[in-house]
Amino acid sequence: MIPMKIWRSLAAVATAAVLTTVAACSSTSPTTAGASDKLSVAAAFYPFEFVAQRVGGDQVEVTSLTPPGAEPHDLELTPQQVAAVGAADLVVFESGFQGAVDSAVEQMQPQRTVDVATFVDMLVLDADGEEHAEDEGDDHGATDPHTWLDPTNMVLIAEHVRDALTEARPEAKQEFSDNTEALISDLTTLDGDITSELTGCRLQTFITSHAAFGYFAERYGLTQVGIRGIEPDVEPTAARIAEVQQLAKDQGVTTIFFETLVSPVVSESIAGDLGLKTDVLDPIAGITSESRGSDYLEVMRANASALKTANQCG
Image 1 (tube, helix red, strand yellow):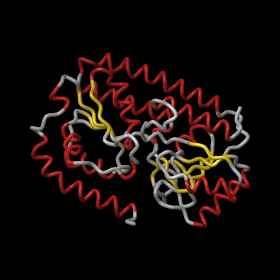
Image 2 (image 1 turned 60 degrees about the horizontal axis):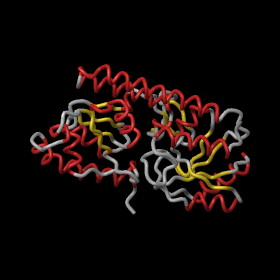
Image 3 (image 1 turned 120 degrees about the horizontal axis):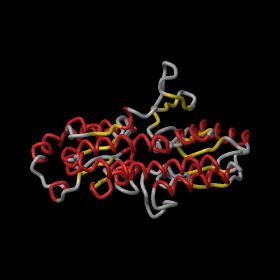
Image 4 (image 1 turned 180 degrees about the horizontal axis):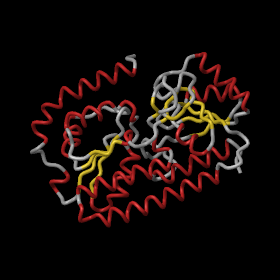
């Protein structure tokens, strides 16, 4: 099996190999924007697609570069998708997360970009798996890319998307502003509801299949323990599994969480060994038929409900 870092490097090289050909034809290729009067927006994956569609409304045609049900961490782009990045009126992405998207943006130079990593306070995992703000200390581990799992970060993303779309189409400024205010209202309500749901929890720790919920935990005063680290496809060592099992015993954890896009085998094995329950926490990388809701807002509420039960809150 090719290690993830090497695989990403190979994917980036492969993407770069097609960029010259794509660049030559992208300026004349038909695009959604060319076929209608809508602005074309390329979103790296679902949460950014959700924001762009809510903010842009009828003025935009939004395409997600990550198909529903696909793992965004190891995304590869087709030549057509690379061309779409270059032709888009706006690209919404997070640098450092998806190497293929970073390469396409760098090479194709789209007219406008919203790079979430440039304005959200990023968290990092240190050697012990603890998360902290990016500017704390000198020696940092892997940056946590799951920024969207804090609704207040989604507010920031919405505001930046609004500004970029307004630059692209000034005559629709009021529409973009109204749409953004409506979305911010929904996100603020969501944030308040989750805060209420997760108040007075008997347990503060929750265990997940991989460390995707750092921003969520930070926002709502909980402690995340990932069986795996940031990379969902890197299998945990026997020592790590033993460590998680001991922590579950010490903390009185009731539930081991897994995700729809990550194999539940390890989570189920740990839960089985300890006689614990299992349940789903969804990092909302995409909406599928297995999602506990039809959009970001609904799935976030489902996550909060699952944690309320597991951590005996309220």
